[in-house]
Length: 610
Image 1: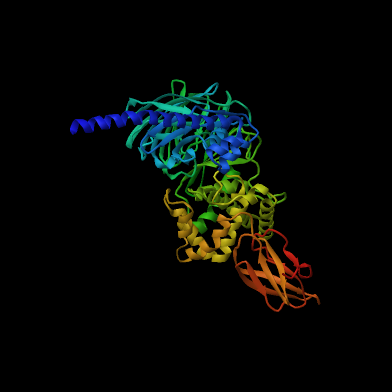
Image 2: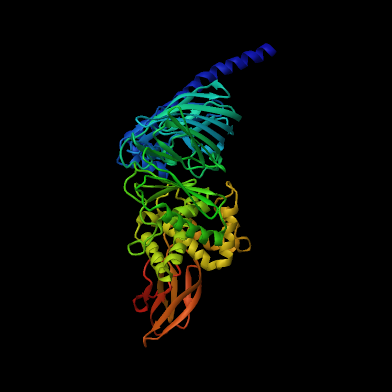
């Protein structure tokens, strides 16, 4: 019987093997069809891969596209499931943006056999693994680019291996795990390493030829100056908003002595035998790093309060250091007085002459990067009223993570601009500022179509709408409760700085805060209120999403010219206005306390009776 059982088992195994081979071949055909359609058949791609907003935009964009070879990474013949690597990218002038766009598609995908054939079930997120530390050694050659070795301590949490993003223009020379060379794949900005579960030391040796086109947003190298932004994917990276990618960084950058180097972290600088070496370390876990270099800089340190301001700029740079110190000191005193000081004692202003124009371009970790000149710190005599420099300084207070991170970064910093404008120029300028922010949002179709909790690429909705949302929340909660909540959020350690942590920071007021915030954060656009007549009664109707608008002011103007001012609680789709006989028009929110879409003056005689 034993021999008979073995014979049967062997026969069954031999009969299953051809079927398994056929299944695997059909999976390879399916993956190949997806990859082929990615290049020039958007409808075919969507039919096979499925529809997501990010991939739909990628394949329908009027751009040349390239597709990497599909690979079966893991295979389960019994369950008819698999993990496959699919990749492709649209060709862009900026390889940093190219990589970001590619990684909305390129990566590992779970596939399963169904009655209709093979089907993609899900894309595996970077968050199944964790990067704990980066130790990056960079050799910079301004005539070409950079070469680097990144020694990472990682935790592999999946049997699908370890994977990360890296610039599409990179070439990976070698990968080791715990000192041993291992198989890897790298295509279209996605790198996969065959690593078992557990804690490991992963070393990646690579080089990148950096773009030399003047004005590069993510990166630009020239012989005399250059910069690389964190969004360039110049080192292994999980992307922004992935908490599992927050790591301790130590970076050393070597370059010819003539070049001054500046990293967006506290750094030391030494010159030995014609080579300058800068070593920078993070004081807390971060996602990615930016840096720049320039042979003409004359670095200067200055202080305001307990903070060191390092300025890496040429001698003719404007504004001058004393102007920057004065503006930073004013902003620091204002924000620290209300919301507590951030846990930092050093910030930098870094001039990036390779970027287009002047102005305050972006904030990264502890550094503010500018163009050839920084421009005026603030202005009130042009549209829009802005506090440019102070916006960037305000980024020091929040280090957000999660889906709503840009709301709590750019929305917060824009809100802080409003505080600075009022302190610097008075209440009238504050009103101009908020009117301009409302206009910027309401005329921007992209921003109006976006949501604060769904803005991973920072497409614009988080600035004006985010700032308005915080200003309205302050009014709803009251300044004391608002300040207490923001202060609690600022004090949170990194890794506990997502949207839920922000709301919970309001303590006893958290439920009220969440009730008010939910439609603003999750919804799109802004409240749109219309007027409806029902017999002798007028009704305020919210068309579209329903918002809670407490202490909402409106004026009922009657046919004799008199106006009755009322304060209502708009809580629901329909809010009746009692005693509305002889009312000819209704004026909504005359003080401008709320961000509203549509008309603010509603003619009662023009409404219809349902």
